[in-house]
Length: 356
Image (cartoon, rainbow, N blue to C red; front, side, top):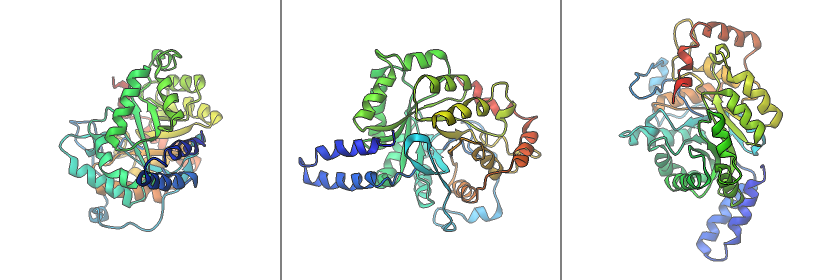
């Protein structure tokens, strides 16, 4: 898995003699890939599903953090994303539930993406069914392709439909490869059975695309059923898993953290945390004080490599980056205190488990 970009380099270099100008471009990219300079999450603190008002919490200084204001030179901590060979900052930008995926918010989305690049964000998460999210990322990221990691998702379960959706994602994103391609929202046994079917399952599209250098890591995502994610990791050597990791999870009847993380650690699967602040619902008096506790809790879980958080504005984005820059693993007693405070509100903060 760690050598996929070297394989891609060989595929690209094979055609270099055809067109000189194209060759120069490929040489530039292959140099980046060969040197291993592979940089690299979702559900924002204040981003809510459509129709729900945001719960905005800002410091006084945050109002001054417009898209032209530089932050301190401190960089975000980086972690290795399991066996993928990718090293990425602990915070990435989610492409859903924000202007990136919202019709009529193109200018806001472009400002957020550009500001994310300015602030050192390198991991960008999206999906084929996130509205205009892929297209908006595709307007900005191509000029920075050598220093960003793009992850997208397919909701298709059979080979031909998955291939078609992958081609659509590449076109929208204006790129010829994805660093991570994920099977979206695994929920039932039949999801796994259909994807992994050796005659026409979507896994065939992923394997073929990886052989051709079109994708790197192959992953799964899910926010309903931790047992299904665990089963998927046990049945196939998936490289990554995108799962909910927040301070209310431990109180659910079927939590993700103790079910998925140990299995992922055993297999060196890269874990990306989502639903970190439960769309801001965790930010209530007596529960969590803000993003520092939400992000700190998720990133302090053993086996979590990074998180994706969307942003409603460039101000929220800057605040989130500042939190990530200051991150320090939380001691056990602080984690326990946070869990104590979420014990009475876990139902409200697990609402996404009921999404269809």
